[in-house]
Image (cartoon, rainbow, N blue to C red; front, side, top):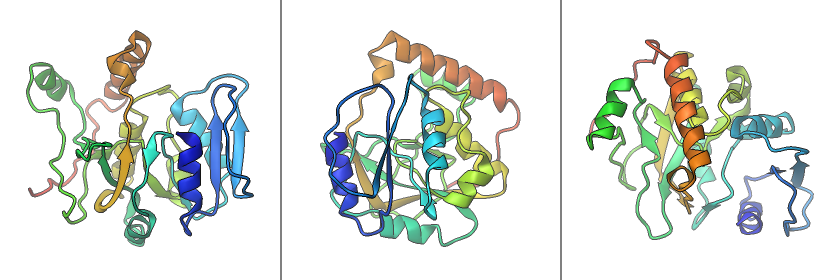
Length: 233
């Protein structure tokens, strides 16, 4: 996955730097290109810590955390970077499709104890209904498999909260964007493919991380979640 992703990214003229983190030692076949920097960890770090360390090496105007299981069938960066031309927007995300073409639930409303109980009882899970031809809109949060920030805004936000080892650091940083009076924007005209692993549904360790991160988010933002204007259907 990683070699294919890096090769696709290098073909996009907007991509001037790729920072790849090897969280555990492994051999990865990569293109020989000066734009590629590899960070090798002596011991595994969490999602937020890894992306914050990558950001410390970033020299570009934009910073794009993305997962290794992302693929492209077109270049999303012109649409996404244009959306960041609005200074009120701190973070933009594309539409996310699965390999079979289904639109994934990568844009949701903030979780609360009440909404999580409703989800457990087979009610609404807070996802937005999104179409690929839909105009840009402002969801409460977007998933961290692909996010595009202006570097200055990521810096001002203090990066990801490293107390979240895995899961909910994306929800948390979106909440902090809104709390700073800025916007999270979804751009369905930009699109990426995500071969999701859904480890929390198969691994007890990942499920434990998921539940711990959920509890940390609810405690951190208790009673202080930002009010986001409702999106019209």
